[in-house]
Image (tube, rainbow, N blue to C red; front, side):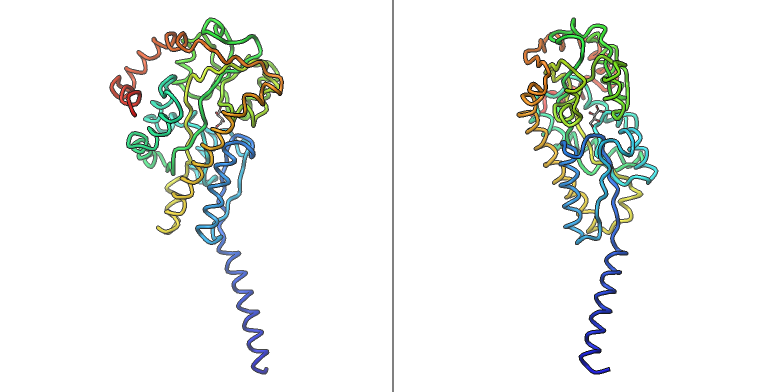
Amino acid sequence: MNFKQTIRLTSIAAATWLAIGSASAQTIVKIGYTSAANGSYGMGVTAFCDEIEKGTQGRYKCQQFPAGSVGGEREMIEAVQLGTLDITDVSTGPVGNFVPEVKIVDIPFLFRDYDHARAYLDGPGGQELLKKFPAKGLIALTWSENGFRHMTNNKHPIVTPADTAGLKMRTMENKVHMDGYRTFGIRPTPMAFPEVFGALQQGIVDGQENPIPIILSSKFSQVQKYLSLTAHVYSPALFLTSPRFMNKLSEADKKVFYDAAKVGNIAQRKKVSEDDANGIAQLEADGMIVVRKVDAAAFVKALEPANAAYAKEFGAENIQKIRDFK
Ligand code: EAX
């Protein structure tokens, strides 16, 4: 073998080794969420995944499971605990069943607006809550956002609590929501998200409540007539993984994942804001009848008995601290 051939063979061998090396060194990160890939969660997860791939030079790559393809939110959190799913981007809906301290942020009419909610969750109070996860076999990489929830139904426009009386509405598997909604007169029917479209279509429930980005990406306009902009509760989201998953990462890679989650959160919140700004007109164009002027004060008043119960459970001063946060 002459010198040139030796060099060529060596470089082919090196290239092959590199290819095998990089292929075998690539870890697939399985990440699930309940809404469609083109919605707010899809935007958040895609931005997160791009950052991970970049930050680890392709050693980690995501496989996305959108649209509830690996289950509802409760099931995905259980899968993350078990290690059959690596990460899930979920609303806080079922999270309080795993980490009870989180339930406080699901109280209806707790946050004034998006700025209030985002600043609180990103601030010391919100960050303190994230520390409660590891004891439950979970790690919250960051808060993210589902959005302010609004009611849809097939019976009639909702303006005051009198209009919700007796309505059978799908809710998340969230006791704080269910207790609050009962004071509005709603008959809450908890259900995992992947079942909601079918339940609305078949009339198993009269309505449901979700943020505009979810109503849009889930095409609820096809199965719901009325949308009322009740904004009755802010719904946070979380990028959840497990100590089991994170402990396999080097310190440098851990930082990549945490930083990527921050980027994912920004993209997700941005899409929520865009959908809130443009989505209502879209839903109207799709045939929904939109009630923009809701008697919010009457809903807040109706909630009083639930507020008394929340104060007992979470401590009035702890709730007030969140309300007063600026
Ligand atoms: O996370 O279950 C719900 O209504 C959630 O808002 C939805 O899955 C988006």
